[in-house]
Image (cartoon, rainbow over all chains, first blue to last red; front, side):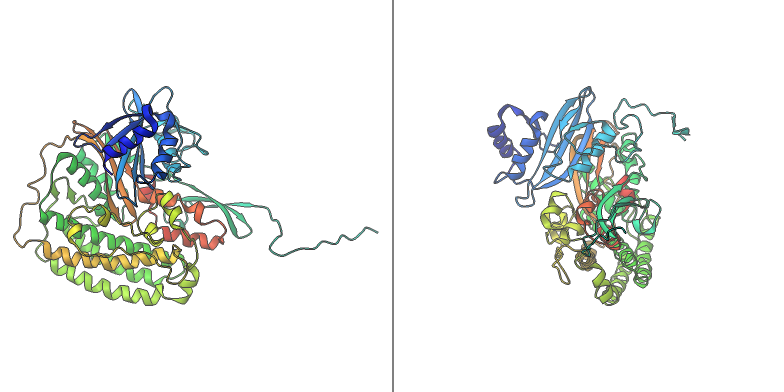
Length: 158
Length: 383
């Protein structure tokens, strides 16, 4: 299925929650959706006949300046097609519903995005830091992150 | 006189207190600085909580502060036992953003390097897995052969492990004159040793008893957890990116996608995962034999295609088949010399996340076997 077909299919089902499709050359074909309805959209993508995106490739958080973005890369082992789903949330309220129960793979990926970018995945059963120490302050991959001088009395920058 | 209570006990149903045991981070059987908090009932694993991050080196933050070319050596240090394979998806992704396609000679050399390194990585996996089960000799044999591969890669690139050989748009330097002779020598040695390893380790009754029916990963669970590589193929699903989304010259090469079939136990057990790695080594040798013939005799300047200015605009998710599974890079560029975001989707990170699911109900000693069969490298998990 081509990205445009997938877009039309989602548009019929979810209407205004599906915002736009980007098919520029040099960009991964991506569908931008409303974050509030992301779990239903993911379940539809996973279970609907003809789409069947069963394989969760990747989840990345991105700092877009004003907003934070979450990018889901999905693949279908059965149909051999792929699609990218994107959501954007404001930095002062970065709440995205968690998709960990749609694909268990996103459990650790969401924890990583929370750890490094501070995206708050609502409904995640165990949203704790995963790569950084549990008492680290701030989210390092944000562009406005300022590195602390000391961590527990140890100098951070060598 | 106190009354004597009649206490009847059914063995196996005696409730015991759960104990939490800390494994690692400094322990040889965790294959690096991995910490596992294991909840035990007697000797039976009730739950496992992996704790990672001890080797976190801020790869993604560092990548944002360097130019596209300078990221390549950092990518090497993710999975340090197969650097060539790490470079591939990153370099291919940036090349795709720039619209460059290297010549067939460069592509053939890249494939040979990637496959040589895949064999080296699988040799480590099988060797350390054998050692987890208590077999020390195969470890020595496999490391002896791996040294030959490293020697060839060192002759090519100048370094033993962290090559920085595959460059955006080309290669670091061309192959040396006796390259093909060295490859023929390696192919012969590895075929002989692998036959020996099969006798010594994989068909050994003690080893089979330790690994068969241990850590069974059902196919639907494997897909839902996003497992890839020998982990997913061990469960019987023929998913190999070299076949699914061919890159470089893989579509012109003849090789099989090896899957686990439950030869000695159930499909998807630890033995199957290990066996898939043994079979893949043979397929890699076949690929090298074919790709070797595709290198044209006439030499060419492999650095000619390296662009002077690398500042692509766009974003894409580029992936390739790493020995451990699907290594992907989500690269965002805004037309400046430094990337805006590089996210590494590391296969070990995803494969490790399935361990609480597949180790429940097994003995504690089996947990070490399951962990060994996943074949993790902590440099890639923690990035």
